[in-house]
Image (cartoon, rainbow, N blue to C red; front, side, top):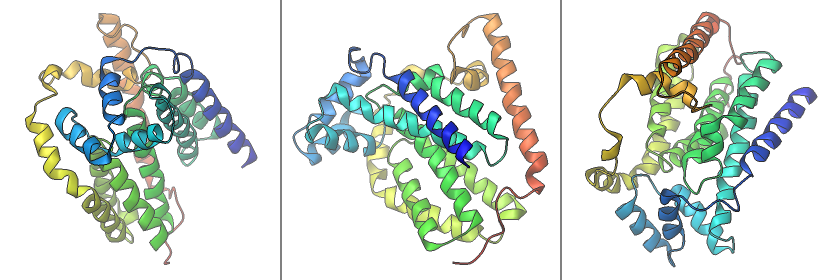
Length: 285
């Protein structure tokens, strides 16, 4: 336990060190300028209206940033929210990975999360992406807690995490859908799937008041520049989390396929060991 705590602490510090260069001095990017204009709004209703009018994401991160700024934090320094999310992300990846692999491999997973180029870039950015990554891992950790030892407190934590994730970025829905698939397809979760699903539903309902604005944001078509579906970026996604090298070259395609193969191999390994409980038998409470 002490070794694991030391590794978690070291990985979190490494994540902070990787994100600090340029955090206070690098100029705001175009998207960050948009965020800065939102968090400098004088009132909360004006902040919500600004998010609805110009953004394609929900308002939670902007709310946290707005609160930090109005508490006296300079606009550029509000990037520290993303840095803190990045440190928490790397630490929680180690903690979660320790459930399925040995500590050295869990440390490697945390190390990749701490220094991966995409994660480092978003970890010093005035945007919501690093918070989304953190909440996705928190969601997995809290869900496992509910499955292991269901209780009202753990179910409330699960509902709160779902609400927070849903109000941070719409992509959080993919994590929720994956979790629901696991709950209802894995026989090992049969005893708690209804309770866990109910908690997830409560969280979704808590985030639902923003849905009408979601539709307005969708019809603004602010994602037009992404273009149509292309298979190659999907295949490259696992590698792109950690490096942008060779992204558009034939060699880059080979690297992307190799990274994807590693991910698929890991998934198959988890499927093979899924008959061995990764958590204690459920108990009441």
